[in-house]
Image (cartoon, rainbow, N blue to C red):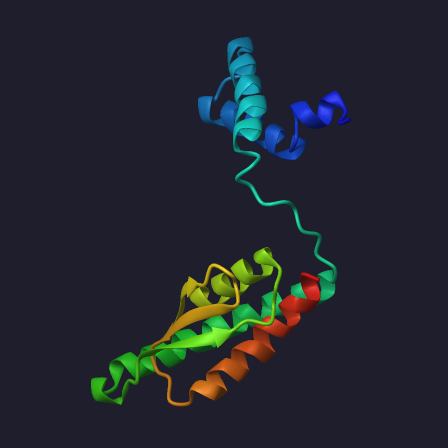
Length: 165
């Protein structure tokens, strides 16, 4: 049987954050704001706990940090490449959709992969199949589908598999 504290506050850090946000938004420390904020801080996590995914523990923080820096560098390089292509002849663009088979199985890992692809200019993660085995990607300029998929797999998916195992 669960302790009363874990059943009343399934996400204590989120409850504290909600209370603090409520107080900041109201710009007041009046006891009534504390009371109403406390009600929200308890009620909202209870009401939405089934919708929030379980917290996944990152296994390799060093790899996650290196992946973040790789993503930031890729975003800068992709911005330059997209600007160069957009300013060039429109006929030179080979925009299309491709399906990527996913090796990563963790739902949070799939979501992070899709977000990383979307944040990188020139690519967009459009859809994930319900079984989370395929990711639909749109690319602004895809000349070699296999090379794009291999690049995404090597640069993003493989490290994410290690991080979210």
